[in-house]
Image 1 (cartoon, rainbow, N blue to C red):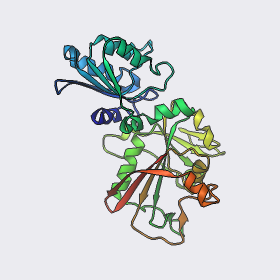
Image 2 (image 1 turned 90 degrees about the horizontal axis):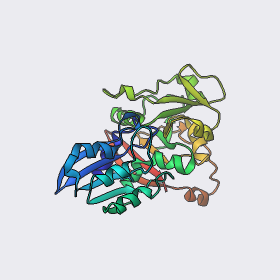
Image 3 (image 1 turned 45 degrees about the horizontal axis):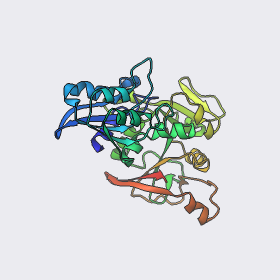
Image 4 (image 1 turned 180 degrees about the horizontal axis):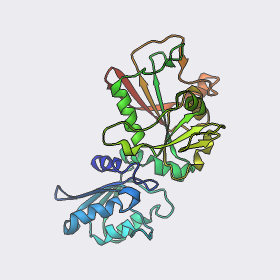
Length: 314
């Protein structure tokens, strides 16, 4: 399933607004087929993997990160039917599909066809499908907030200097995260002061630059979208993964609204003292309130001399 989840990452965000899914067909311990959701959402991962496996799929095991879809589309057949017809002996699913058009019906079809079905509910598969799950459950994109700061929690010096707090490795990782987003958002102040490009500057991934959004009541340049409140992200058409890179005011607005699902903290080994705090008032007037809104540390790693901490909403 870890290998299937890694394949699913290749689909993001090109498969949007369809979920990025990964699939592997294994026969007698040998990989017979593999696939991930193709750009534009079709073909689905299962269809690609089964086409590669051919006749070897009969009696084999399919590992797929999301329950095979049970609804027929003008763009292609239901994957649950394709999998059932392939005669697989076992299907291992990362997570059930919360889409009401499938929601257990895919599993039922596979079991009716004689396949042994196992649902892991494994975290790696679920995290890779967080945009899909968040959209269906909450009607909005999955939000990642990025903060690059000093050890003492500042995003700029007392004079406003902020480029660059973190080093090249951390910045490259940030661009990799941009490439996985459908849209990227900054506040109106950042837009007016910096006129940021917000593109992806990694060789070979330049075409993955996300759509640009500003949280502002003012005018935005051509090619930008504007929203007036954090909650308006629900109106961003086709956006399942949103990355927020704004300043302290924008970060605080999203945190206060309870709209941050994932937090990336890039921490440089410097002390600025008296600089601009990364986050302002988000309404936590007591320690009890702050701990009730705690995030769960998912990962910590070194990026050159900087440290990356990844937190997930519990």
